[in-house]
Image 1 (spheres, helix red, strand yellow):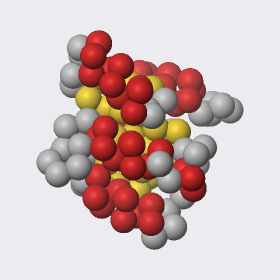
Image 2 (image 1 turned 90 degrees about the vertical axis):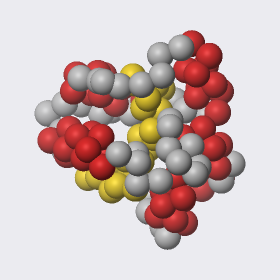
Image 3 (image 1 turned 45 degrees about the vertical axis):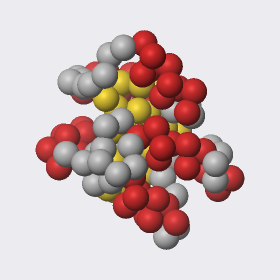
Image 4 (image 1 turned 45 degrees about the horizontal axis):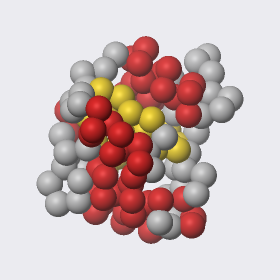
Amino acid sequence: MLALVVDDSRVERELLARTLEAHGLTVERACSGEEALELLDNCLDPDILFVDLYMPGMDGIDLIRRVRSDHRFTNLKIIMVSSADDQNTIAKSLRSGADDYVMKPYTQDAILRKLSFVLEGFADD
């Protein structure tokens, strides 16, 4: 299973990537929405996308809208990752096309629960 982690913070990107890799996923990384789109345009076909909300340039909402507007990614699962905890931001993320939302700081268990929820058949071995 392939995941794409998009976060402008190298530390956050690596923490999440290592958690996913420890549970059997292959992980690609992008430091911006623009880099994520470039990877997707160059035939990267992930099963799940983890997107940071607050990034310079293209933020997470804009990235999700762009991905959702592309018919190639209709089945791509997307989880928004953010420190924002207000209901308006969470609702806006979900309306933009995110399948779920996880709040920073998160636990490994929280990430695994979200994976189980959005990826049918995902199991922690």
